[in-house]
Length: 430
Image 1 (cartoon, one colour):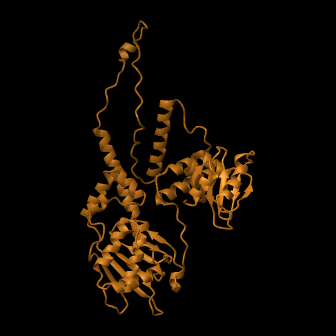
Image 2: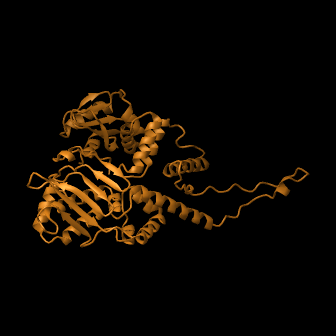
């Protein structure tokens, strides 16, 4: 998902009003989640749904579940603290003083974690999924990662002895939202923090890769013996034919985590980039990014980084690239959106205003009016309303942008198109 900007809704409790996200590897505290429409689903991901199912399949009173869901949706749950095997929060009910609700969950044994880590490290796609905040079904099936019926044990300081009471149910629904957004919350509940988990996976992945490389047989190479190449009569044998270029760049070496060493994920990214450029130069005779400026190359690198959201790895990459180019992470995020919209041409549209010649630009406004769209005001290569904008690129394509009304905070959206009406329809989801 694109970088989400969630509004912060203050807690109604005095201590909770000042709550901020406070994280250590084995303790994570999240500020109160904002209210949301009751029509929204309880969970979005399959593992978040499994968490909700474990609650609802165990509950003895559907009415209390419904009230707990309503409490969660209306923002009655204060800051949530997650530690191995426990989730704790204060929940506001009908009385002035909030109740302390708690959920307990069994942590995984060392044997189960060993099985999970080995299963994940053996598959590079599993590693990539975890870094992208995704949980492959095969990993969850390797151990009892997801809760089942009677696996989540609720407790509350309220006098209601139901299983669960509405306060514990509200906490469970809000925990599902946290697990939805970041599955490492679920891993922490099962006993392992994110930093420890990723460091262990990096070491194991390096071990697997080293074993694969050692098992690969060295190919037989055409060569000329040195004795023949250095004959005294000066007649040297012909050189063997050049080695054929590989079909694709090979995987870079593995870089295990070590104290004081560079970040292994950054090294992997740089090595992969170098291999791709070398392969292109070898097979085509040109370097595909030689003409890019440092800023354009930084945007290209960030845009190529896999991820549907700002994960910990993505945030670190953005911060490093922004620092190296003298920009802010917000500048980089906007530029990445433009690059993903239209490559280097899309980045040019974001950063450069220009005066287009008469022709396509002048015909765009009447075409938009003829199809019932509101009147756009022109300025150089821009056509704008308070919240929508079309920009004509030097490549002849129209690029869509959106902003909150009155903010002039324009972000690239949609696909570029040579027809301004189609570009706007795509921006509006038509």
